[in-house]
Image 1 (spheres, one colour):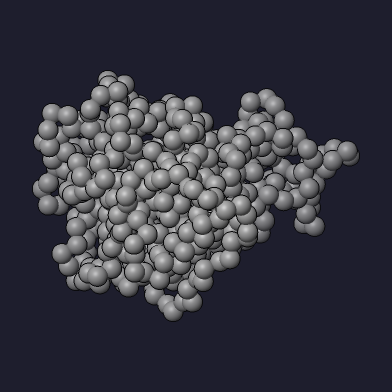
Image 2 (cartoon, helix red, strand yellow):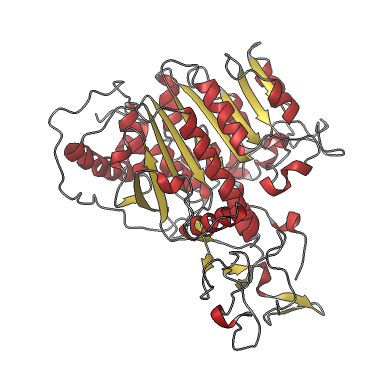
Length: 526
């Protein structure tokens, strides 16, 4: 089956229902050296409004136990890198791919994230799902509480798509706290800037899909504000210094022509041009839509930049050069954001999301998934190059995994995107059906079957004459679905800098917030 990759590589909106769960207990931290006189925090910290939540308290206690034994070094700056859908098999495959792409041994190659000194496993389940979505997992990382899948920035007491239920269930994200303490803040993403992961930094909504006012449908939407509007009206401090990614249509009106894509307009029905409202905030507020505009910005200034480089998500890195108007890479965005945020002597908090790793996986397109991961890793390298390990905590992790697996006994050096070879005998290994198979495959997805005479034919495709290393090739999958699903296995956390010593063992995902909050001094304990 060879259908349009562009049509298939889209995110999967998760529709969830609440269920009863058993919440986590505080884990026991192994004994280590006690720090008699820990360094003083840089800031007194604030107690977020969700501090009474049971998930929050459990995670806070787990991190406090580590601090009691190890101490915590104070961090002036925090950078949270989130590879959306970057499962551990994705990291392994991307490592091999990156090495092979550079003409060296892939299996022994080291990604930048591999070199960070501290690491752990992260448990990604949400309050109501074993296999979570990006909204609940991002919320866990930036608020310290596990919440219902499909919701952003609201506690477990809020019901999906029910605006009224958000009252009494609101949260303060690490970015809210940073702004109140006078730090600079920024978000960059290859996805829409209103998409689930970046939205968790500034928005509170019972439905991750309410990205513009046109999405606020149904009686339960009530008085809730759409996510794009919440970004522009974000009341914390002096607002974001940089917010750059995709999602332009969520900010423009339905009768306003898109500046890049002919024949397309914005989505908004309320007549509000939110991009214009951004620039109306003052002469230092800049709105850019293409690479030329990006290159013209002096990021070593007091400019406040809203960059919306696509109507929806940014191009995959493989396809970026062919973009009509041109757009910066994730590496470019990361360098620009750090340059701008570093102008604040009080420090900064930054989220960098490699959002399109996830989208490629949903389309069972492993080539783009591993290539996006390679680019994401280069953005991590850029951050390490631009910051001081003595004052900047950098955490690299994923929100959830995917169902891609690496299998089949391929020989050392076999192309990671190729078919499994037959070792010393040469040729390709074949299944009992006499057909070759690929090293990378998925448990679910669009390729499990193909349509024949109007009916699904689930006979395994013969790949004998197929170039599986082609960037547009879609890997085989088992369960026939319109979009490949997330996985529920643990994901990796890599960390360096002050506070990274608190990252170890198997952690609840919401502990990441407490590591960042305690190291930066943004989060108080009482």
